[in-house]
Image (cartoon, rainbow, N blue to C red):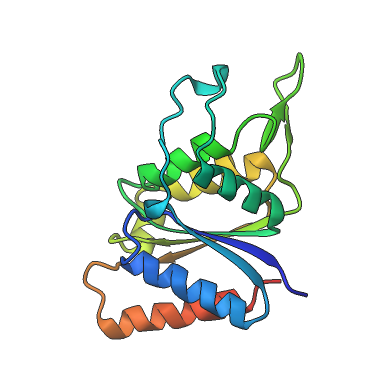
Length: 193
């Protein structure tokens, strides 16, 4: 059964290795018969700062509105980005701040500490690159960026399951290793269910 997939490249440079990963995933998913919308955040014009928090509505730029509509359309979300300072690039965090708004992605309940998750019915796959060996990121740093996107962003809004694939260390990876990771990404895109 074909899925509606949104791929979001969270690296500011489209010609980065993350860009190659996102391109590979998009092409492989299309070849597998899925419907795919691909967004390169570095090419989307928007202010990543939520200036007044959730206290005042900030109009969405056309690119953000298009991404929000695509998330509504999708039943599978894919995020590709590097781990910088233990987490995602500020550009991707800005997208989440601006697009995953109360009333769209979640809704606080009156007189309650709990909330309604408004993006249920969607799954996600995060593909992150890092210069740190993934085992070291897991053991020494306790994966703060992975917990952030999985638990406090996507699952908070009802997206589940959220799978994470860590590729690294990229900094000194050979061309053969980088190609091996791209082959792995092709398989991930073909196995989406």
